[in-house]
Length: 299
Image (cartoon, rainbow, N blue to C red):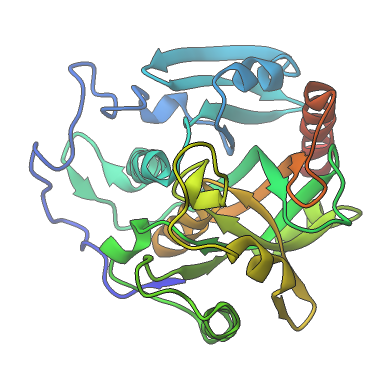
């Protein structure tokens, strides 16, 4: 995914658009540029931040504003930020916008910088498997995020030819219902996907706009379209399958593509939707995922 147009360097951003706190930190994350590490791990659960930073040799920044918890420290010589985003693509919109502002906007002058800095952002999350052969407690690395949300529709973007081919195959296969938002597709960073995907499951990830009806769950309220999960499971594009459901990756990949950052998602499978199984010890599996990511990206 690529931007059609970005705000030019030198354009002053109004206080109502770039909102800063009295200490100069960005509005929601409550972070200043010096608080940000060279490698950023984003997680949905605020409690997972401390499980990552427990590996750091030193922590030099801790902050919290609303659900956005941040710990920045050093691990094997690399300065890392672990950041909780909360749940959903709407929160990813906030997080990516403000992370980018920290490195690519002069916050004092309120103008985009001439020189661009690319961030490396890895999401460590949880997910539900859409394939019977993807067991609970194993890991899925997202080649691309299939956006069932609507965040990227509000940004001027164009998809790559490869993304459009996958998307068109998906729309045709599912006979996509007119009453649902039009999906989009955003691809992760090729090198990060290859490095984290080695020995793990790699495929397409469906990013839903909710946890229950949008993922085909039925409690009392009944989903408006039946059979979507079955269509997701049976979808194939060349050697790619739709492996899992989660709630953040499409916006993470899409906005990273627009803003020039490197992004990848790895998720622990906590539920298998076909087997009707839920992990009996997902916390141990999540800790194993954290250790694997640290070893592969930092060593």
